[in-house]
Image (cartoon, rainbow, N blue to C red; front, side, top):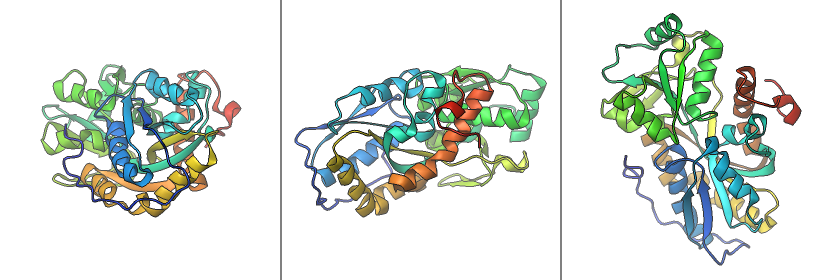
Length: 327
């Protein structure tokens, strides 16, 4: 899959900032290469490098539903030279799952896009509509396989939300990242994908996947394909909060690191043409946020994800006990 083929990054002016890193920064992507986190993080890094005057090295460290790489960033020296990335809704539930003792408020959040999940099947699947698929899942509980990037991933979260509202049961097949999960559906290893549009878009345009519905209440237009209807057309009242992605810097790093990144986001990333083009071409929403604005925006997805995991007996700790009230 070509990640940045459609994006041409224009040169950016240097950022006047107090923090001037004197060595490369490690940015840990806690998922496999090629997935939604890897795609947007690599592009964002190329846009940040000229602003901070230093190389950003992407390190893929998948495992434990993203918790492995996130732990590495959390436990690294608090000098500002180790960051991580991903979906904030994942970051916010590691403590409830017993994977990592951390909360979303332990991090400085810098969002770039919000990704949209899409319910898709292979091109030769017998299911032509979301209703047909859901009816089959009801008729064959736990038989129809869904490939995702693992527990708490965008695809898994989407399916848990669908299961809660509709009562369907499915067979969950976990992979090390979103791209391997999508490829599994294309190859016929699994029957359904519910990963983000950015991970499916090339296969959708290439007619290797048939998108049935956006996992939400709004349609999604994809360049080169057309409009995908919302699941709410088939499941009245179905909604899903925006799934924000971004770069995370643990709190406790020097203030000037956070101030520098905040300036970069507000002065440059907020109007970055390369990121905007990426969002439009890949079926994502351009959503650059920082600070309290970011914390407020991401929390609904954290709440939904945490309580879905708890109510489906996948979480070990009640979200309420770790600062996540029931939505």
